[in-house]
Length: 269
Picture 1 (cartoon, helix red, strand yellow):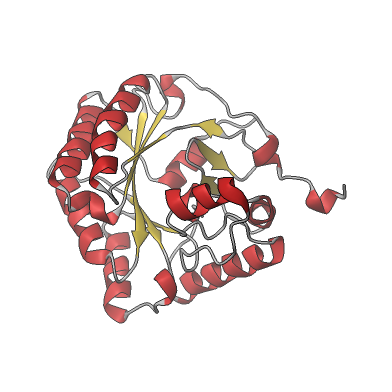
Picture 2 (spheres, rainbow, N blue to C red):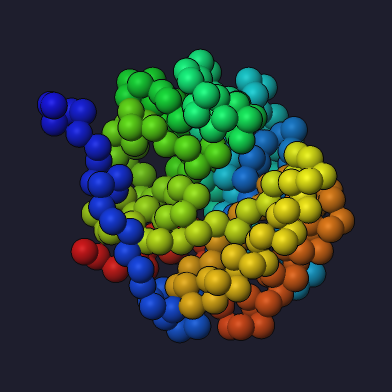
């Protein structure tokens, strides 16, 4: 196999398991809002407003430049300017948030069509296509004068070709569902996501049971990732659940950090 086809280091390295105080004295907390786009911004803003009832928390907003093929708007971009001025971070979250390729076989169909509803854009891209989309995203941010440090793939699905492109794209960090990835040679950090599934009533019910259980298991984790999606503010039971988790993390003394700040604090190999 040629070197060009070898997986990048962050895919082959075992994730580091660090003590509670590795990033902050009593642990770190990252509030992350996914799928930020003109079509979702009203709900995303409501998420941030709900979180502000607890504390003036900085959040990392995962922005999609062409959400489901739709263009951006001036009003949305003004809102992003304001979010930056308030201390939030903007990160790139794909280009369209749509998986453009067929899913061969039952396992891929389950993973890429049922579980993620066809939104895992970087799940199966060739290296060149992934590199093109990453470059488009970087230019889109640059034209608006927005700082860009991180890329988080839609649905946290990162195929080999996409990972190879990401390793060369100049970002500081990325994430999958269960790890935080520094892209300057640091070992990836084991960091499970606290995330709700809201597309059906049974999913919401399971999430309200599972996510608090996972949060309890992660009490000694150095990084607690609360990963919210626009509809997490729509369903009252889900909203109460994540607000309770957020309040508990703050009561425990966890320090809120932007994802770029997490990347800056990662220990070197």
